[in-house]
Image 1 (tube, rainbow, N blue to C red):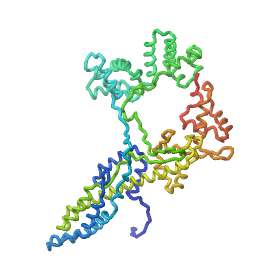
Image 2 (cartoon, rainbow, N blue to C red):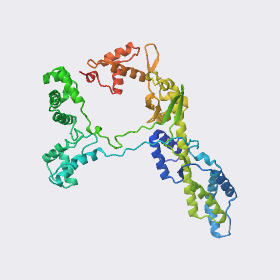
Image 3 (cartoon, rainbow, N blue to C red):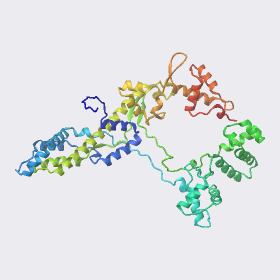
Image 4 (cartoon, rainbow, N blue to C red):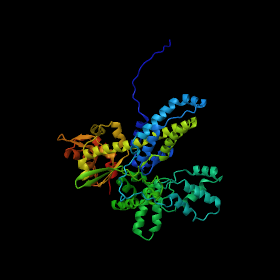
Amino acid sequence: MLKQRISQKLLQKLSPQQIQLMKLLQIPTATLEQRIKEELEANPALDEGEEVDESEIAKNEEDSFASGSSSDDGNEKDAENDEIYKEEEFELDDYITEYIEDDPSSYKLKVNNISPDDEDKTIPVVVENTFHEYLEEQVGMLDFKDEREENIAHQIVGSIDDDGYLRREPIAIIDDLMFSHNIATTEEEVNAILKRIQCFDPPGVGAADLKECLLIQLNLKKEQHKEDLHDDHSINVAIRLIANYFNEFSKKHYQKMQRYLGISEQQLKEAIDEILKLNPKPASGYKTNSTRGIHYIVPDFIIQNREGELDLSLNSRNAPDLRINDQYKDMLKSYKDNKREKRSNKQEKEAIMFIKQKIDSAKWFIDAIRQRQQTMYKTMYSIMQYQYDFFLTGDQKKLRPMILKDIADITGLDISTVSRVANSKFVQTEFGTKRLKDFFSESLQTNSGEEVSTLEVKKILTDIIEEESKRKPLSDEKLKNILRDKGYNIARRTVAKYREQLNIPVARLRKQL
């Protein structure tokens, strides 16, 4: 049986401005510029540039708006409009008066206190040919029997990835040629042209995998060192090693390789040294202006040591001066002037409602940017105070255990807000540019009962591995014992976890001859 009932519920809901602020907090300074440009394009009421003196404009508008009232010419149509738009006019008048009486300077983002001596630094952009354009130039230097072979060569070059490898099978390239150029070919023909491309610079380009890439480079070196018998012998051993025992080489089974090849340890070392000189990613040796290969880090914060006192500043280079567009404010004034002379029609009221929405949206965005900067500064200042000794000395061993809750308790912000600030943000120090997330770590208790940061343990672990004998690397069990001797009570599996987080391979793969 269906029933209707009335009930009350208490719900918490984020306002659009709060949602906008949360989204802005997540993005780094490098992305903020693009986000502001998108808002400037979407909202014509938002403008950038120096704020002009609006005190006189505001005073004139306030005087005219205060005395502005609609005149009645006795027309029946005006009376009808009065009934329809009475409520709308009241809301608009109230809004316009509130807007004009508000301090216009509160809706600009920056205070004009930037020194003219401040240098406007921009990241230089290098203009040069891409890796694939470099290969295309070399295709143009080859002699082909006809245009058909040249198109096949261009198709192969276009299929080479950004590392310099050709990971597409010949049968797939044949299908591509038939579909895009209506060219029928065979695997033999594709492989023949591919062999010519594999002679291109940089060496190793066009290989299907790492093994083939290394062999191409070794064979090229063999051609270049024919006269040097010593180098030629080392290269020959290296070619046999890669061609026949690549799996043993990748796993560093040195004794097996010596036994299989029938060579001494010194000869094996010389062959491996030749291999280590090769480039596993041929395209990395050629500079490219591909944005995928270049990552610029723009610091969100800057910490300077001024005679033993830390000074924190927020990088606002990518946040232009934002304000409300003057033309939109003039439209409000014009609307009031027209109301004194004649009754406004429906189209004008719709236009003024549109202006109201856009100005509100611009205010919200400016306020969100301002709140973003305040929240970021407040959070980073608390982190700087918490890790004061590190920012003074740069010694990772002085990093204190710190979790999101610690900073949330200090700032009074929510943990999720602190997390958004710390995500993808960087701080520039005299010891380098650091990721904010790297300052957060769990605590570990020493034998003396003192709590230290896991970052300190990782730093000590890295130092131990760097100082170990590469001929006999330390196992995780031995690393655990050394750390315990230093007072850090830690399990072997924890050592393995920290080692993996530091991208340090196991002892067998760290071994060198």
